[in-house]
Length: 592
Image (cartoon, rainbow, N blue to C red; front, side, top):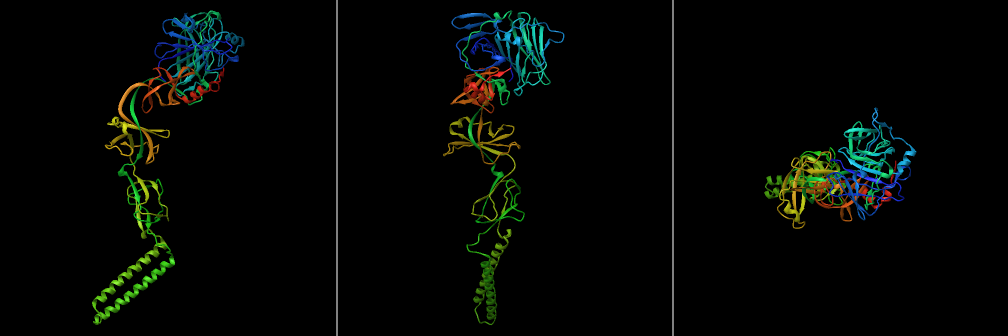
């Protein structure tokens, strides 16, 4: 929103029964400056209906030549001073000129006189503010109420306080001044100017408030000696969209000046956010079994764990039909078998001493005792496992790395199969962006320099300062026909990123170009045709089809369709698009 001043002027004929607009279309205009003149009716009680109108003729202006040339059925020459505003007024009083308070005089007779004159509409920019000014063509001795709409370009809001001074100068000296000390309402100042002498002067509007001090110098203008001296302005065919200041000030609206931008070329690719292999671990079930919580309780997703920390225990599954009574019976039977085997061994050892049995009989008895003891221990352990569920009776599940649990599928008492995923742990530190570049774009990705992607309303930008290129794949995937490109980066802590989250990434190719560009928000897809809305006046816009080129993080190159210095709607473009579809509803007019 920065640049030199741009001016737009319109003329309104209040005698016409139907609205008609006359537009001066600038041909070979100087940079950052335009002038437009229109005819439109003033409604009763100062109400204007803003509409999109269609008429027939064209006017061309050559700035600085002192003439306006019109083209209708034949060519005419009209002095520039007869069309462009030149104001002269009564001398400045010692108190600083006429002071009309907030709203100016409310003189009914004066306003009836204004109805007999055309109304000029001026749009002018400084680096900090936009002025949209409406006032009757000035006639010596006749009052003219100015309707000055001021917009603060820092946030595109109406100026809600301040003192406005209108000055008329000649030969470098101020000849008259008119002042109001506050707006009539948010954004609207209404000083009343009563010129006394006809002539050529310089018009300027100065606004001063606590945090804003601007001067809008509108250039050379003329005060007409009589109403009859106000020239007729031919009509113009200009199908424009009306979008009032009151609508723009509601919020969500902004303008951006079309200008040369340095654009970084990129290719679009689907991508995934993954953890580096040395900082990510998946814990699987080593065998089938039942999950048991440790003594200090089961961990939760988001908990930080240390390597070797006990997460859960996996107990072997018991056979079907197993209950406490059956297991106790098995323990008693195994104990009895063990006692019997011990007694048999003792008896055979006594017989061996007496030489009544062979030695191998004693060895067989020892083996039988060991088996019986093992069976007894096993039966007892199974009973303990069923009764206590102790962790020492199963397979411990330990954290393989330090990090944060990002996925937990452990539920106490549930049965899991062997090799089933139980826990996933991500270590702290950088993440990887793995972009899959389409095969057709791979020749442009020899030395990628960065990337960016959106997650909701947040945009993550990977540059040389906060990321590094891990590598570009050397093999095209035979199924997806893509080539992986991997960046490592540290995400912003106040915008959480999820592991394995899919995003649409723009990978910078390293190519840099200069070109006219507009913000992404200025573009509207209208049935497959990219369009923007160009401001032609404070409350008027025109639909402009454009051809786009490179896209980078914030800007889109415009190959054709707009010129440098023009202002496009960069925020709220879709609202203007709706107004174009239904102008009667969107641009219903406003009363002053």
